[in-house]
Length: 493
Image 1 (spheres, one colour):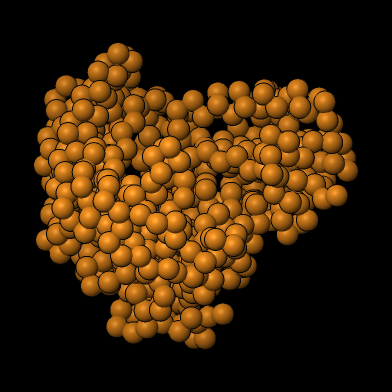
Image 2: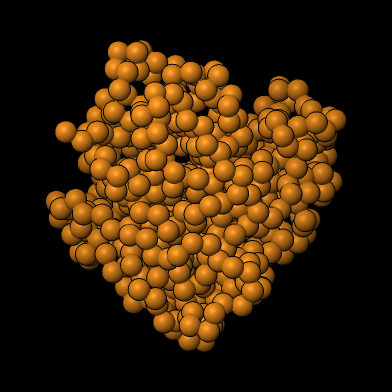
């Protein structure tokens, strides 16, 4: 019998996509996905070093597996991702029953390291210092029949003082436009309706090959792919967000009216200490330009409360920006030091009770704004791509859930048994809650899709590699398709 595996993922969308690659590699190597993750022969932890208490969560979970490992010595435990890149040998010292530790730059080595650890009967720790194989060239086990992640770059060239990501994922490396579009085309050919373009800073895309408008051209090129109904992207940086991207969003019908734009703080002094190369006026100006071109755009953000040295006046400035920005949603975080980041050693670390009080005030304000924005959707007819797993109470309420084009979560009464994840429905919104919309009167229209067919019979996109390795610096070779803003690109297969 073949060995089984389970992958446990923590952190951002990039980690989720990396886990799809890890699963694809393991299945290519002959492993089967475990029907019961708690009984898997191989358990892989894909870790995050950004979220608070990430290390405590990891070691707690590793501790829970220790008895299973003792009872079954053939079981293997692997730890990868950002925390593995950061902690390296510390993981095996604190949890000596771990078999494999690998980093963000050598995901491709996972099956080999598992074989080596089994053969040598010892822990294998391999942390590459720079990217060896672009993750998107690896096989993947896609989780969704209707939506897919597509990485356009890895790494980041920014130096935000609170962020450890650049030191863990390295400098930005970009894929060639033709390679990205080939992967998108392959997903669409398998029935996928929606893709999300991923990067630590997507609108800096093109730095490797010297094209400052590469991201807007890529968005426009996605608009020329027949069958691709929705395009999203995350995350941009205000520093690099330019008018050509706004124009591409507004003029490309399948680019969704949704934007995630991290604010982090509304105080210019705090932004300066964060090394965020914009100020609040610039940030609000971007939002104004976006709404002028895309009036219905739903804009979300990230905000850090309690950054070292943040005064009452600084925090009030953040509240002022939030009031003016009218975000549809905000992901709010209490600052906590990350070892290895410049901010961890800054003076003015704030007491927990001060940070907590500010955090609660910010959350209350944003909840009020989000609720008002969702109430404004009442009476509207929205197109919803039906999803799975987003409505945690769907089973009890006999509802289905999905996302509107602007990314808002919609719960609805299906009205019949024929609506499937991957299908597209139109519903009328009856009620806007702070974090979701409700359509209680059933479906106005229902379009069955190839994605719904695939989901119904358990098929997933193939996830085959679509490109070769890392890009080189300089102009692309003459044989590579050039993405322009005014033409539909040729797609490489």
